[in-house]
Length: 220
Image (cartoon, rainbow, N blue to C red; front, top):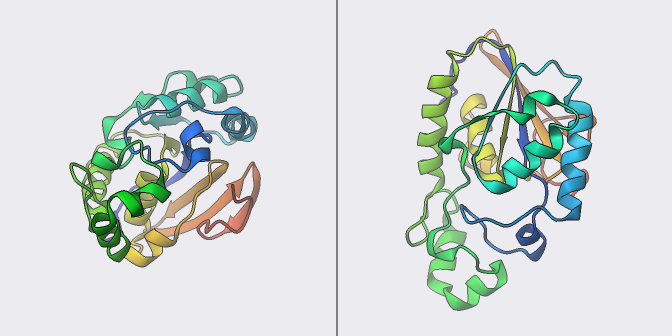
C-alpha cells in the first residue's frame, strides 16, 4: 500500500466497546447492536486514560455503538461529547451477511464464505463492501483531515475500517492489515514525524506495546 503523506501528527484509533453481537460472534457491519456490560467497561477504562493525552479533536463514526462509546468516554473527557461525525468512518458493510452468526454463514452460504476466506481483502459479500472500498473511504477522509490543525487527534470507529486507516497511514501490506486484531479495549497509536510512522498500542490503558495489536494482549 502507498503510505499517506500527512502533517506531523499523533493519531489514537479507538474501537467501540464490545457489543451484544460481538459477544455472540454475529456479523454487524453497518447494522447495529448495543454495548453490553463489558463494552461499557471498555469505554470507561479507555476514557480514564485518554483524557490526559492532549487530544485536541475527535472524529467518529455515526453508528450507535460508537456514539454509546463516545458518550461514556465523555464522562472523563468532555471533548468526546461533541465529536465530528463522519460517514466515511462507518464500519465495512457486510451486505446480505449482516445479522448472521459467523458460524452459520459457512453453512448457509458456503460458496460465498469460501470466496471470502480465499480473499478477505478483495471479496465483497452480496450488496456489501470489500477492503478496497474502505481504502477509498479512508483516503478521502485523510485528504480532508489535513485542514484540521490539531497535532494530537483521535478516531472513534470500528475494527475493519481502523485496520485499513492504519494501513493507509503506515503503508502496510495487505497481509499486515489482515493480521491486525484490535480488541474492543485496544487503542492503536500512530505517530507521524518527518514522513516516518511509528505504531504502538494500549490495552485498557496499559502500554504502550510496540507495533500493531495481534490479539496477544488482553484478547477478548
